[in-house]
Image 1: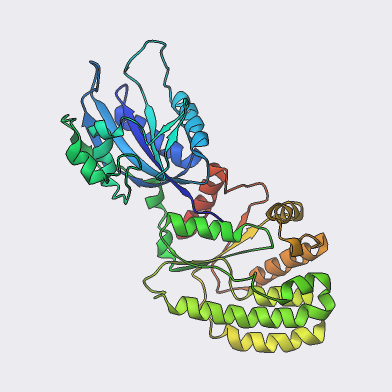
Image 2 (image 1 turned 30 degrees about the horizontal axis):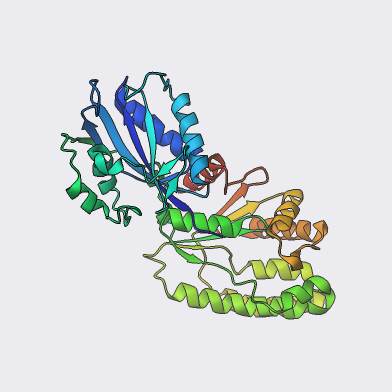
Length: 377
């Protein structure tokens, strides 16, 4: 899965309760548009280019998988929802909220609808000063200048005064209080997608399952009875080796680690796929290994109904998965839920994502973050 885009937004307001306008806007962006990763300090700046009340300004870093044009469309809709009324009069005007898209990664976009980086950003202290607070490793792709250079070169000498610090929505979620989070789910539930997003948004170390390298997997989907035991044994050996190696790199008392699997999944799949005598042998081996494995501080199970799982499997297009029967997925789901019920010492969070698209719909991702937050309270 591709990395998320880094979008920089500049917010401004000079009408009504300016602080409340800014705070409402930050919250709405985080809930509806993209994950707010960093928020600058709040500054008060004289109106630029016209006579009016002073502005409050700040800048944000937002993570998203959406396109730049989609972000622009959603920003314009949010301005309207927050009360902005655009006048037909030419030139600058007072406004209850103004959201400008300043940059999208380090891309250059020059169309009638959208120009990025914002063509006036280098001439606006009320943009540059808040951006400096974000500690960006960002270079203007046209001017080939870093932010500190743009500040030195700027001819805007406006008096931008510090007002106060602003709260970052994501900072409320102390995810790193869990040193080790394992995310599980059925085939196609979205566990790797969620692990990637959490790792990027919360600056976590990531452990991803290496499933595609298993030579028995395509053969298993063609002839389950014949290849079930060697498949499950090779998965167990590989998961044990990988998670031992990967977790050994980290200090689970200090580092924050997100994994897209937990080794117990081996037993769940084995119980579904193996004959009874094979499973008894397998479980003996598993129990020996499992005792040595570190247990996650939080175990997240993404539940998704079978119909949606089949849709996701079809969409991601792995040829060897296309013939997986619904009955097999249902058995796996049942296996997970039975396992979860039997675990007394594991901190479990079940999230039903059957009607969620946390990759494209920010509200769905914000819902997941809120569910995790509840486990911290």
